[in-house]
Image 1: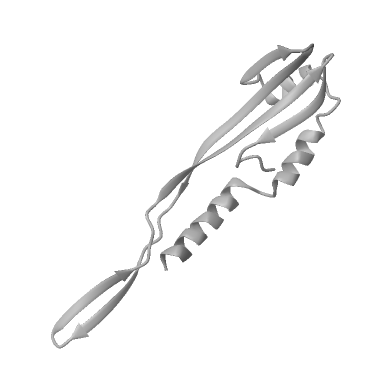
Image 2: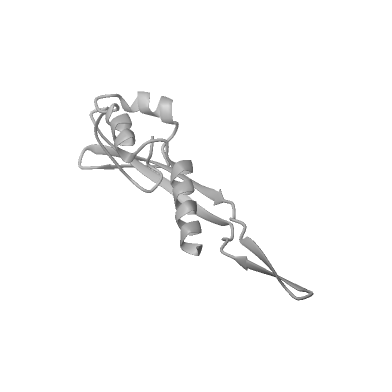
Amino acid sequence: MERIGLCVAAALLAGCATTTTTAGYSAMVDKWLGQSETTLVRQWGPPARAYDAGGRRFVQYIESRNVSMPGVAPNYTATTVGSQSYITAAGGMDAWVANVSCQTNFEIDQGKIVAVRFRGNGCRS
């Protein structure tokens, strides 16, 4: 019973963290290829990190948040034996918090985005 609760919680977390898949996120960030760094900063804001190497510029955006999952109440069963009643709890799960994050890296050459890479469990669109 506890495993079912964990599976349900994992499915709920996935539903909260995503609206589609990483393929959707990939398609969204790939649209930035060929765009200017200025346009990127106007849309996404200042990057968390930026560095230059080999004549190229690399900028990184980081999103990180905690997702709270409510607990699941146990099932209660009442049993009466003679004049005594007993209540037994089974299953249930404590509330928990999971971190959801996404790092998106843009490679820029001569002011234009030439590559995009991302990683993390929160890179969903």
